[in-house]
Image (cartoon, rainbow, N blue to C red; front, side, top):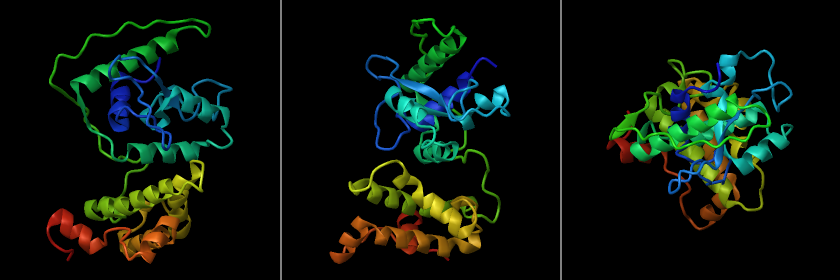
Length: 266
């Protein structure tokens, strides 16, 4: 297998919304005005032996699979690969999932053109020798009004939520995501904290407390899980400030149900 398939690249591009996956980086992968490629398709576990996070037990197909890839701008790509001791496989998988959580499942004509250009560039890059300098011509545009990538939105990298888990119930899954996104927003606001770790600490805390990734926790534990996250939000710096002012930090489960479904939960 020479590299990621075109279908995989388009799926990555759609879910990434043409943005670098590194927290707080808004750099596009392909400049929408000039079609200049300013980002990379990056391997979580390195493609080549000796590379960062290389796994000799991976098959060639697994190395170029969607689950092992994420899109980063060239600066963040260098940061990630220069410090594999910090940017571990586990960390990069969590960053990937968090980044793609609210991604698109459809590509517009412009997005499809950019995704195709990224695919062509990556394909030529892989085929070239180590010292080769390659110029990639712009590929032809897709002559369609809309290109649909048939993939599951917010799909977990390795394990799909099973029946009876929080992730299997759409309403409970989305409300939990609402709380987690609020927590990350509050963390982003807090300039006193630095590093990517502040964005993934919640997921790790849930896993430690409940023994599983949040969407795989049994549905029977839903109210314990959301109470756990709500407490974390309220104990954050911004949460304490809002509380002192009498301001709300998040929608309750009942309020969220009313807003999105027009009725309170049964």
